[in-house]
Image (cartoon, rainbow, N blue to C red; front, side, top):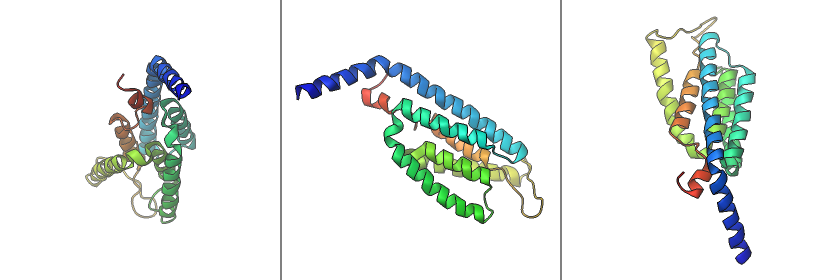
Length: 182
């Protein structure tokens, strides 16, 4: 029992000493990810393409953030939600409702949110998607319709919803909540 209390005390002391550094790095990764999401949204709005490099970079940033913020303990749930989402989105892709870039970006967004922030992300996605649809309806945003119905870039709505999830603090470091307020 004495050994356990010494180990726990050492862990708490280590976290208290290093937590501000981890917290700052974790928040910096979220800011970088938000900037990248904003760029992906603008690119999709202009060219109707979501580049694989940006999706891969967002995925890499997620894993680095999970490791640094202590959210690695939730990694199985995040991966399961992303896999289930990808399976559903792949079917929707075969119906030509969503493009491939939107499927990839939504999958990465589900990876980021996990089960804890998925509802918030979904509500924000509904809100931003509705705003985007109304902007298209009233011709504030251009669409492309080469051989059929109009194509709407969906990445701006996905990016706005994920950035909103970041801003609302759903992805703050778990270590900060375990060790108390900073």
